[in-house]
Length: 434
Image 1 (cartoon, rainbow, N blue to C red):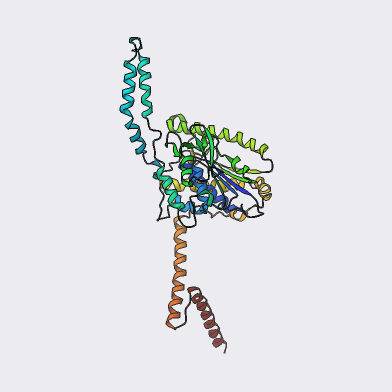
Image 2 (image 1 turned 135 degrees about the vertical axis):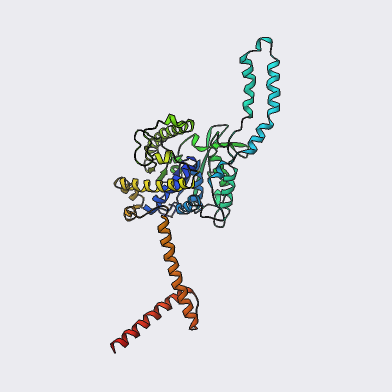
């Protein structure tokens, strides 16, 4: 945390698309409830990559994990409702730009082909000419402008900022420079004048899905192309305890069992998207493991704790993040899994956390009634209790006004009501004993 003289706690959030964001919200709520001495809105340094950049930027702007759950899982902010389809709007402007190139590309391709000698009139020559048409293919399928505009509006509210330099604590958003294939850390010196919302857009521009994000004279794509977590950014900034959340792990179908288990199904039968997802997860997982081993040697005075799904978690792997019901179920599942992981690893974690002034709240962990999202019955009970309290207070207010008592505020009326009730009881008891 960034308290003067306090422990320097950092947070690193990996990517994973909408799935990753939902998982990270559920996991962070569980960690926030359990880590006594940690406030994820006040971290010494916060690093976000791809979808993790979305969450990291929100935390750095003072939105707690519970706030993020209400906004992005429950969509309770009616002024600025968030829906995942913001991230799935067709990149119509990109399509139009590419289509506009077709006439020139066609003319150039056929001119080059027909200008060849007779020997060049071959299949190979034809395909070489047609290859030029690939420049008409869009750089991305979906438009990421809507997500950036949503963040800019959200960070424009009072008490928040879209400027790295105005934040109270260090925020780093990592993207990849497309032309150099080098990682760029927005929020660091020389890159802190870029709006936070634009940095998030750049970091989450997954090639093929979203067009590269143009910032200044450079094009940027997903920050996960270079590293999974970029945890070293927070460690170099001075974090001594680094909490990492990685929502994407390869799925082991042979281990899958229980609810959502699909062990009898071969991943190859699920189609191209599932095969690509498994391949991508395996690549980033092996790369992250190598990075974690290296950090232990590079930063021997720092501790790193990592939280991620289980390898046999079919609920996470096969989730439909664009279904509202699945969003809630996935977030709740991430919350429950993280709590179970904390209980399982308690003996391992406690001495590590204690070195940094953090302790596990065992009472919170042991509470079997805790949920990320209260069940409908519990919500109704809570509402009924609040209604009863409000009715009681209004009744006392009405009684006080009828008697002409001076009223300054509702709390005073409530106190007066309690004193009046107590006085009547004493008089009644006195009459009974006389």
